[in-house]
Image (cartoon, rainbow, N blue to C red):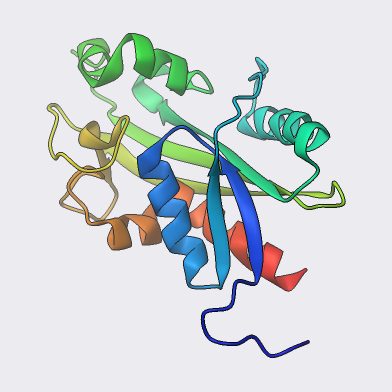
Length: 194
């Protein structure tokens, strides 16, 4: 293996996302490994599926068939136990329609507030080989919105063992404990080992 010079980019990966917060999180994770993550704005058809993995696999295949270069995508969901796993794989759609206030309204009178964020991060290399990694962050839904950082459901999600919501945590800490941070860290290790 050739020695990498300081500052040299090891791998340039397109990351399909329209979410600037997510892009910053993933760029920060990969920068330390010498990989450059560049935003790709090319929405892929999101299949209706039962698992995050199925959504990611289909999205990677569609994007690779179009670009033939290394690409990453992810799909995440908030699974609330007291709402029987809702919104789950439909989290993005539910967020666009209900957002945090709508989830808090759904949670009125619900005693089991435990929840977990799940993420499936996927990568397809220039040869079309895919790699998937998952990450989970357990926590609970609090009764009010707190914090101005992050995005999506972050202001109402309190990770286990923390006193701050995802929206109150700094990016470095969030990347260490979050579902996305865990999934993309595992994916980055897998890519680096290839």
